[in-house]
Length: 326
Image 1 (cartoon, one colour):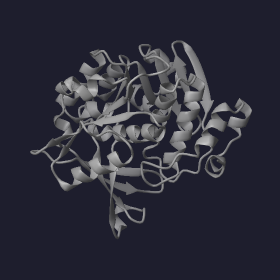
Image 2 (tube, helix red, strand yellow):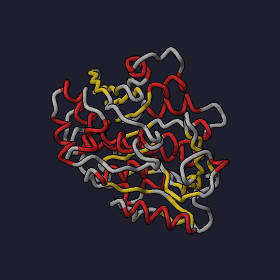
Image 3 (cartoon, rainbow, N blue to C red):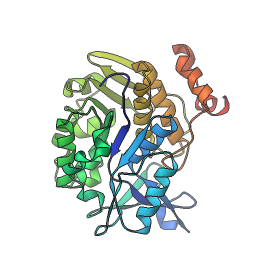
Image 4 (cartoon, one colour):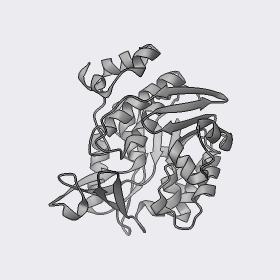
């Protein structure tokens, strides 16, 4: 994967309709549910579009009102959805959020969904063939045997692959996640993984980004996120660590997707790895400050100023600064 990526970023994976308590609170006491859209890969595509990067989302939806809603909302964010298939026999996936003070629990209703029937033939679509980068996640690998084959075949293909480990324990019921996700990640060109995620998957002996790099030597670029503290990117053997911005977190769901989109956007426009990490943190902050998966970016002038700021200024910058100055 080069620092400047030609062609669109093609994001492949399931997007679901989401039911969210309104106002936000525990599901059991909800007076109403709001319909939203939720999908890791389409989240990445939408944030890429926000950054002005050509982004295409490729998937399948049911021939139902939820599918129509998902397609329309993703397209409204500036994402190319022309290659999204409509399956007349299978439904659009659904999730229900149950927010709590400590974390948000998610209930999935996606078994047998339209996207779960995707397979390697999708890679023959012209909408995939002209990709500058393919972005995939471990979520897709967990949906079905055919989806796992899709991810494996993409990793053998001609396109650079960005892979977010995105471990969802509820989707893995056979104990295969550690081995499968490690094998997939080590064959990708660019990998995103959380430090805590790596520890949960591959053992408590992982204490820092260097341990993750030792476990995954294959990717040319490896990005290890350490929560709200920092992120470290390995460009080959060389590590670059950039602290996260201080952010008042409203809800963490979607922040990892936003981070990946910011980093990919930085690469697409030829930024250095440290500046791509800064753009990733800025984009993640947009998701952290809203109840949904997608929040507004800081003003473009403020983003440019923060990307160019000395390290000391970056380190002392808080989330309020990213919102109020432009």
